[in-house]
Image (cartoon, rainbow over all chains, first blue to last red; front, side, top):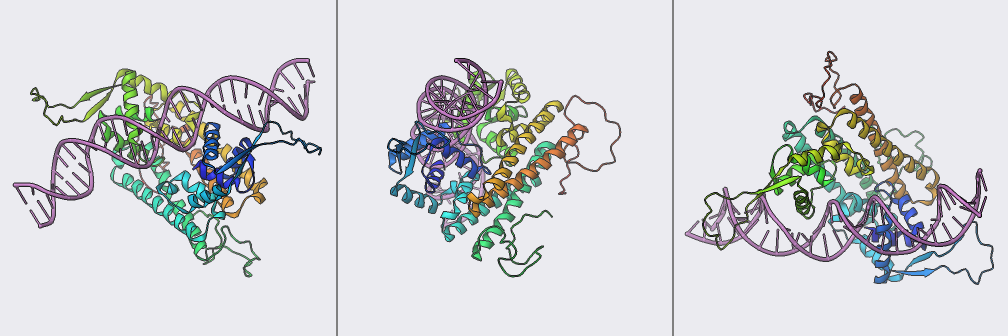
Length: 212
Length: 212
DNA sequence: GCCGCGATGTATCGGACCGATACATCGCAC
DNA sequence: GTGCGATGTATCGGTCCGATACATCGCGGC
């Protein structure tokens, strides 16, 4: 997963490790905590050994330009190679079981802007299926094994079940949007048609989550 | 985390590995997928080496004969020891940073029935603080770095933000319940009467399953 | 009778990832 | 001039996962 994320980020710009971690945190902040350097640096080395990225020490020697406010010393800048871009495309397109778990799906989703529509649809539907299965499992436990469990455990399951139902609804909206060829997130009023006031339109354009 | 979960489950009954995994999955299904045997068995061995649990092979008493050519590998039943119970209590009470991440909090919460009220409150508040921080981070990204990110990434952040806000509200309810000395799953009971102080966990009798 | 087959059951191995830690430079406040 | 927090690179031990292997048991089908 880290490999995919690094390859994806380096396609936007070459970066050094520290920066990569910050961008990673910003992009994936919704699904996981900060990436550990204990994962980042070994992965970078692995990617470099495989030829997906190249390492270049920053040398501003010839430039007499004014150094920016931020000093640059001893940083190692990583750049993605052509093979790396190929690898990224391959990782994005091929969906294994890990594509649909929480982290895997999150990383894939974060790079949907670089993913073709058919793959996006496939991943969204696979994720929905997986969440539906988890939801059924929780319903089973809450229904069949409720008396074996204490009140706190049950409350935990209920909260998890609620989150599942919510995510399925979210995925449904995204899938509908994909099928209709629209971008995610509600197109703001004025861009599409003259709907001055959108409360709950029949078209799944407004992807705001509303609570029942 | 696995250590805590195993110790907690074995306090309810002695179990063998396969059973342990099933119970673990039932109890923690809301927060994580099934436990891998690649984690379970090494952890069991570690716990046994430390003396927290004991292992007893299920061998038929009539097997004083020469072991058959196909040496039957019986089930291995694990039982928690007195030291193990002590260890569990210690792990439950002491809260490190990992107590408040998704998995750690889930495991602690799942054993709230074996946790005293002060600790429950401390953990709930710690978790709330952590989620609030994550929420602020997401709001920052959505506010300040929105133009740097594509629509899909933004949608992911919004979904994450929504989940954070929802969890904070959930935690608020649980905290309020704890302070009032009630069991979880806030009902609107007429039973506000005599609250006998109980050092043991609140009687989890009211386990209605209705969605608010 | 017996054969496959899914559930039960124990176990290992390589790899991904994390948390703690170490170390070094820079800008800035005091 | 010194402390301190941000920047920056890097390693190590440990936890946990996914794949894999192998053995037994009950049961339905032929």
